[in-house]
Image (cartoon, rainbow, N blue to C red):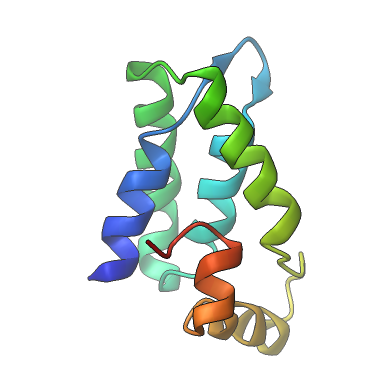
Length: 102
């Protein structure tokens, strides 16, 4: 439940650029990689929808850019590596690094 709330909050900070993904969208899509496989496409669609309906401030974009640097996901198709990366989100350190902590 907390993960979906965090995803919603992050995806609300999206910015639309012609043909480019904002740092907030990139971060949100990374987090979508950690939901169950059957929910992943829906998560990514929701992120895209939010991007098209919300405007993001420069401050929000800067925060997302910082989180992209600290939220170190291993980009891989290997299930075991993805599990390890996503398990990090369950730690206080991982939540802080990815902007999911208060």
